Length: 275
Length: 262
Ligand SMILES: Nc1ncnc2c1ncn2[C@@H]1O[C@H](COP(=O)(O)OP(=O)(O)OP(=O)(O)O)[C@@H](O)[C@H]1O
Ligand SMILES: [Mg+2]
Image (cartoon, rainbow over all chains, first blue to last red):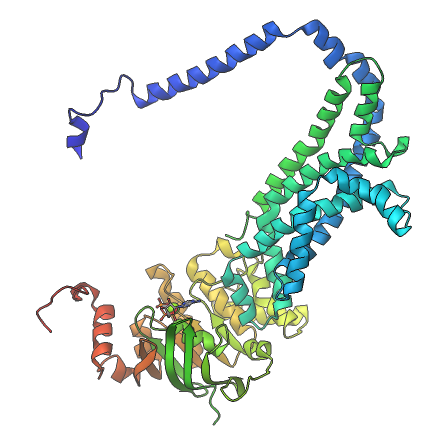
């Protein structure tokens, strides 16, 4: 309707849309530049280089990083494997027709989602051995059990949502071909649910990677050091200030960022969900 | 001659809403029965009661000699066994989106019928060729057009060697130029003697292929008989109005608006 375009009540614009977009971009870059300049001028570069990023201390840490990173990855993978297995079982329990199963699963999920992971690590490391007289020697096993239990609560909810997001028509098609409910769950529902939950599942994995920093609570021998433990030791060594933390922080990013890329690649390859 | 489907006084309610209000229906072997009727009349529900995707509220349903719903006693039957012998084709195709076309056609053969992989693949391939898609076995469902997907869905059902095929508006989700491919596959199937119960709005198909046409409205079968009668010479006023709306939509009086000719 051309009449509205020419209507006198319409506020006159000083710029064309393209000019406005350019202006908006210019302002945003300007803000960024001002912030950067303020930081550069107010920061004490001398103190930063000795206390926050001390190259000498960083280099001294370097040889310890590969095995520490490997340990971090191992703790993560074992915990994730357990968390995934428990998570699937809990998700199926949540959707079970047996009310008791639903209650147990809900209780488990609410409990372990609600308490700090630190408490669980302590409990598995010290309280359980005392209470039940079982001794778990392997740090990996202890870490996997504690963190696996914690992540199972989150993973269960993610998988449950994924299962419920599978289109009803897929399940009806499977049932109409004579597949039993269990068969349908295994061949149709779960495989499709996993596609749907791939992105949130990557988040779980990344969160878990960072949660492995709690294993120092279990008391580690040098060969079992994870990244955070290496960072803490560097922190306590007297020189370099906070350098240790920044170095392991970078090491964590080297693990978690590729995970994000991997997830995006998998998502693209599987076509992202069911449709 | 045993009926393939026999229903007596089938009723189905969702809460207070009665969707099927006493359906009596018998389908004999080799018969092609088309179900027509306005939206919400209960056609899909009736079809889904045949393989128990919906559970009848009351009444008796016997399919392929198995009583799957009955008033006297709760039948304790293996519904999966009945479903394995009844093929179903949906409006939205419902191909398994995480499997290739060939896997779609083999998975139930292997997991339900226990056929070996080579056997299942051979049978799947035969049926894909039967629907004109013998070369698309490796494709992903979402790479296919709607018409192709629906033909794969038919091949998937046929791969189970069903004794009865149910179709729920198989062409309603298709672009007009793709409808023909699916209908001609269905016509061939009918000519080969398959027993079929088809919900459709394709009157030409019903007229040419169906042995019997049922017109449903408000949860009951209003009129039934040979296609020549129900479609070309309907006896009931409701059937006539419905057919006019379907066959000549541009000259249909708008509901609720006063019209002169009645
Ligand atoms: N799961 C359900 N819960 C409640 N009501 C339902 C359910 N499924 C169907 N209905 C209702 O039952 C009635 C009949 O539905 P049905 O799908 O059988 O109609 P239809 O004849 O197949 O219509 P259409 O041509 O639109 O597919 C409709 O009023 C519908 O809203
Ligand atoms: Mg319908």
